[in-house]
Amino acid sequence: MPAHDRLSVVEADITTLDLDAIVNAANEQLAPGGGVCGAIHRAAGPALARDCRALCGCPTGEARITPGHDLKARFVIHAVGPVWHGGGAGEDDLLAAAYGNSLMLARDNGLASIAFPAISTGIFGFPAVRAAAIAVAACARFLDANALPERVVFCCFGAESAALHRQALADIHPG
Image (tube, rainbow, N blue to C red; front, side, top):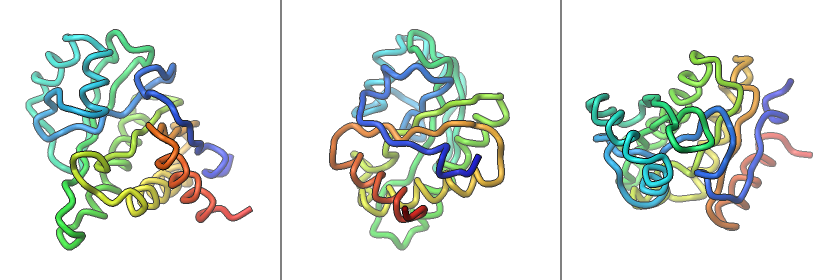
């Protein structure tokens, strides 16, 4: 199945999705934070923070996997996106790597479905239009070369983010 048929956009609370994995927009310490990270930690329960502490952090651009605990998702993949510093500090490549490394963990763990939030676009300040284009392109490239995951969902917390991701999907596959 072509990559574009395996990508979709939903406007929802990522903590409610019943998929193999959801992605946490994490910080390098993998500590509970604000935004989507805080919401995932609250919904998963305190065991998630314990698992994250045991991982001893995660560098920007990389990802780690833990059980989902009290979430519907069986796993949480913690992806550390870059803080925006104006675009000249390798932010685009680091953001693409965070998506790609998350997908590698999903593939390597036999996961068929995964949902991403808009990584780095909250308190990390990455421009949302640019981030959506990078996210969609990175995922499409990975799916073109891999059978798993079978389904990638961009889970957007708001109509504006959903529209940006839908536009990015349309840009890589017109019509």
